[in-house]
Length: 160
Image (cartoon, rainbow, N blue to C red):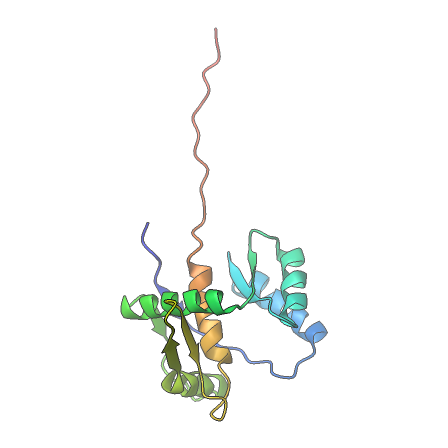
């Protein structure tokens, strides 16, 4: 089964927003505005609370908590590169918003390090900024990996 094309049309940024206020906004966006079928949520550290609340509200079939480790971030990085190199990942043109500017800033300064154990790390030099938009892009590619399942069966013939 081929991987889907991913078209990014919007970014949101809520730096400093309390989790209680953020939860209601996220729930509305995921459920009512975008009607997502799959959301991969950073469940590392303080993100675990938001991931847990969203999983309870939207269901385990929709929300996938993701914990960043050296190995899991490496897999995200390789999957992100694969999506980019295959032409499956399309980003909207810079629109002048702060979010768009920050995304392209991070994308232009992204770095990777390849380790001897066949893992990689992707990041921004800490003196340059943080990799929030870059990491969220990788999580989006991860969410697109989940294909909806369909039930198959057959009609049972009853004995006469």
